[in-house]
Amino acid sequence: MENKQDEFAFGKKNYQLLIAATAIIILGYFLMSGGGAENPNEFHYDEIFSPIRITVAPILVLGGFVLGIFAIMKKAD
Image 1 (tube, rainbow, N blue to C red):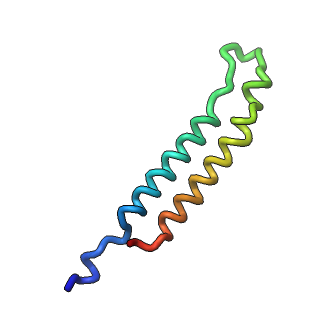
Image 2: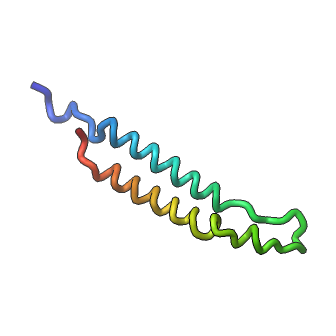
Image 3: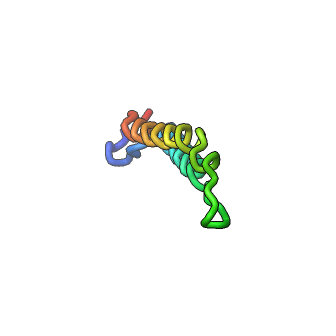
């Protein structure tokens, strides 16, 4: 009979979900970065306010955090 202290808090699926959540968060931050110009006197409206940068990337980051919380709260198998 196994001792309750010998069991891990997370199972394999929990760690896989945590890794996926981290990858999604990193991807979201990567998509948000950039948009600057080489010359500070130039302003590129399309680069700074692109739909990917202001809509898709924040949704990915928030989704990654939600997935991370779910991975932590999920009961180990």
